[in-house]
Length: 526
Ligand SMILES: Cc1ncc(COP(=O)(O)O)c(C=O)c1O
Ligand SMILES: N[C@@H](CCOP(=O)(O)O)C(=O)O
Picture 1: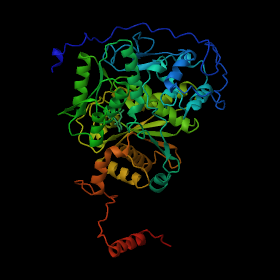
Picture 2: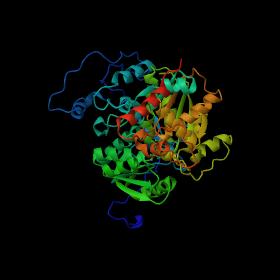
Picture 3: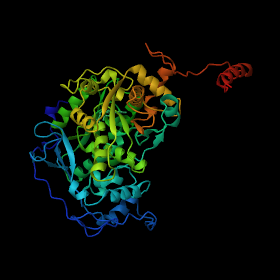
Picture 4: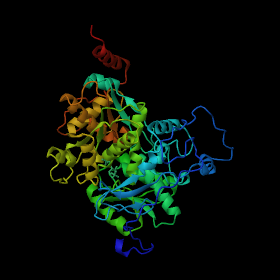
């Protein structure tokens, strides 16, 4: 059906009228945790009580009911609004409520969620560290989520009752002991497993925020009939799962034959309306932007800056997992380039609010077959040119015209960062080597590991530098590429670390022969 003939919905117009921001709410009379209600001086709050157990909720009450019952103690002391990304604050008065449906500034630029930092600064770094630490691993709604445990920094004004969460986040920060020592001579190498998550990628972190806000907008009778995205497979999986949990229709635009079967089946299983389009991701992205400006479909891609508010919590979580010590490097695979900025923003907020005293250097890693940011970086940040993205095993980052290019450039510059690239052979070899040390990573993480290998070999990253590689999706979504690699089925690739199964006759003698040979090859050499 052509968009113009679509008439069953109410007229749908995007709000682009600048508004004066709502002033922050006054401090509350009572709190869910003990703090001094002063907006003028830094309070010295008593840390949240870790040891006092709360009474068990009544048997007929669930955790959402319990949060509702306690709602009166969760006052809205903090606020946030959309502002043009990287605008000169003294020159721009443009801003929007987060309840507006708006994705771009008046000039057509990106937006950013700006928090009332003055209100947040009323509490010192120790206060925030203690508060966030006190919520880890709990089931209290919604703080059991690694995203919503930082609610004041994410969507401060949303009612906990409107939140749609799968208790995402709190993902494993894995000490890559053997990989680091054996392949890189490093003893402080870590992998942040953001893909060990509800739908198997870091997208859950942003999607819980976006779908929660949509849930709120629908309760406010705002014109949002469904939520849509273009996707290389992970955004669509997260969107469809969170929408399904909330009973909200989801629509996903996928580039036909360019995503893994596991990723394709996720939105299908979750009941999304799936359009398979004969174009690449960039073509899908152009279409969803056009469609969402005509129809009451809310845009769920990271062009929508709400998503990045959730994704930034992975950075805060890394600091928290290191007891608020700052790593030297964080390496993030980049495609549409929202996530690298989200990491920067999370780290930067922690510094600005006094939780840490510096931020790590960021590395954005791209597939050489889809490397517009890398080329831009190598040109010394001369004119940015989108590229035609070629096929890559890192299919979720096969993106040539990233919507968040300006955000990524900002993040790299502000963090004294670096952009690296990985060829197909490099990323597949890195993935296979990492898997051989007990991981089971996705090809995008292979891209990030390749960047690390290159920076170690050139001496930019030192052997004792504390380094975090962000693993963005679960390896189980990409079993076909692993199977092809280990079967040595990939044209023009040596598959040096392939470990194919050995076919053996099913008799004792044959099995013994093969095993003896294997054990001899593995026996320690004296
Ligand atoms: C698994 C995976 N890794 C990395 C990325 C890159 O993230 P971003 O688009 O925010 O750069 C994506 C999506 O683009 C992804 O799905
Ligand atoms: N890898 C992404 C591409 C779209 O990125 P987004 O963060 O802008 O939604 C995907 O999985 O679709």
